[in-house]
Every structure is written in structure tokens, then in C-alpha cells.
Image (cartoon, rainbow, N blue to C red):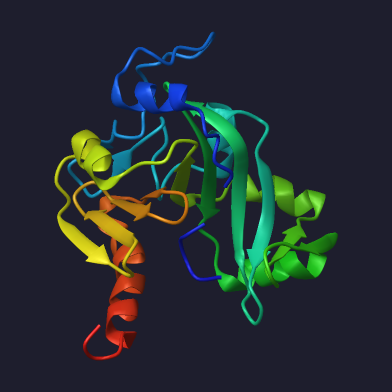
Amino acid sequence: MKFALSIIALILVALVVPFLFPGMGKREGVDPNSNLPWQIQLDGQGGSSVFGLKPGTSTLGEVRQKLGSEIEVAIIAEPNEVGLIEGYYAQVPLGFVLAKLVVTIDASNDVVSAMRERALKAKHMESTTRRITLHPEDLVAAESLPVRAISVIPTVNLDEATVIQRFGPPGERVAVSEKRVHLLYPDKGLDVVVDGDGKEVLQYVAPRNFALLREPLVAIEVAKPVGQ
């Protein structure tokens, strides 16, 4: 499955205000001022840390320890593709922000193919996309694999101005349609997808691996008909 964009909107005005103004979305047992989406720490060597995790370095097991055991792990595959191992949280608190969160595991096609052969079952998701349950032994093995990328889908709708307020001006702005824009932050390893017709997605990789986010957009630009 092509890397990257993967939603249910909780249309609660009370959640919009906390995203803009810290301290107004406090929940018991959660520090509202830590693990926020814009709190990205850089190590000066091409690496980063967000939500207490290091994209490209932290393992699936560390994700489970940091964010909770409720994660669902499976192979997600589109037709004619080997697929990717992904971990999914239906809802996780990131400071005072509630979000869905997906981690994409860094595993070779050979590893994923072998896990598919041992898989227990598969069910269809959107259209013909398949969700393939891992064999218990492979589920254990996946715990030690590194996380390639982290994708966050906030429960609130974000506009471009709000994103810039929190993350600063992007290094690059790529419009893939009239209502869908990618705000790229190469120095942070971040791509924020602002979608006027859908949910926003924040995608994190280690800054040194930013090509994982940028190259698919280059391919889209090249494929566009002349004049668009």
C-alpha cells in the first residue's frame, strides 16, 4: 500500500478551543501540556522525537509502552500490493488533543510476505483494501520492529491558519487539489495534510527520512496534466 495517508469526526466545539488554547482540555490522568503534536524535539543528527517516540528508531513495543496496550496491529494491503504492517489506536490522548493514531512499521516486503503466508484471516476494509490479522508468533516478533512513521488524525478539524499558528510557516506548500493541501516541514520531518472535504492528517518521520513523505507528492505533481 502506498505510504502515507490514512476518521470519524467528533463534532464537539469544546475540543476546538483546547487545540488553540492550552490548558482548557484537561483530562484526569493526562498531562495536558506534554506529548502535544507540535512538541517535536530534534537531535541535530537527522532524528526527532514526538509523543515520546523516535520515528525510525522506536519499536512497536515501545509504542505500546508509551501510548497504551489498546493498539491493533495488522497488515494493511491494497490489491496487488504486499502491504504494510500498521498499528492503530482508535483514540489516544496527546496532551489535551484527542486523536486517532497509526504507526507504520519498517519491515521489508519479504518479511511482510512471510507474515501474510502465516496470517490467520483477512477482512476487507474500504473498497478492496484488506486488513490481515497476524499470526500470534508474528505479532510478538513485530514488537521488536522499528516504527517508520507516525500518522495522527485529530478529532477536531484544522484549517491552514491553525496549523501555521502551532507549527510555524511551512518549508513548502503543495496543493494536490482545490481543497487538499500538504504543508511540509522538512526540518521537523512533518507533513500536515489540510483537507477541506475530509479529516486532517499529521505525518511524522525522522527528518533524515523526509523523502518518504515528499517523493509521493513529487510523483503526483509529475503526473498532473499540463495546465493544472
